[in-house]
Length: 133
Image 1: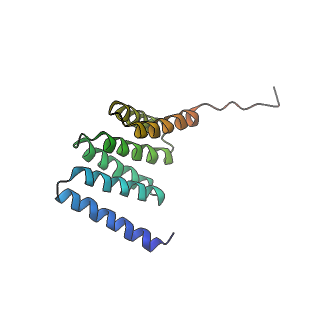
Image 2: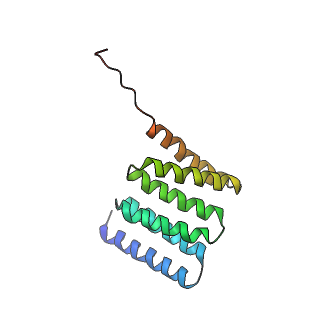
Image 3: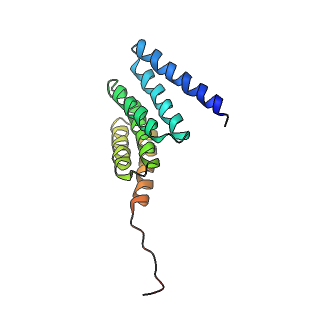
């Protein structure tokens, strides 16, 4: 990927988040912050990804829109997974699944539940066969 293009995309997302905040459009702001979190995640900047995901969650929670809250939790989960912080990733994924399920958001619930299943496998202790008994 072209680093210049990625930098421009980040600038545009930052501008969108700022504009939505100025317009007091919390859902738009939360979505722009999720985009920033995902962009930083793909760039390998996991600390920034987590910071924007948390900020997105704070804003999303003011909207009461379950899909927006759930998407912010999924963004946090993905950042935690990349940081190999599976316990916090699991907490975020489970919360996203619950919120989505309670809101009747089947797609959001399925996505979060897939993350839960993946994390359960990742956290399972490995049993290695030994040739020595």
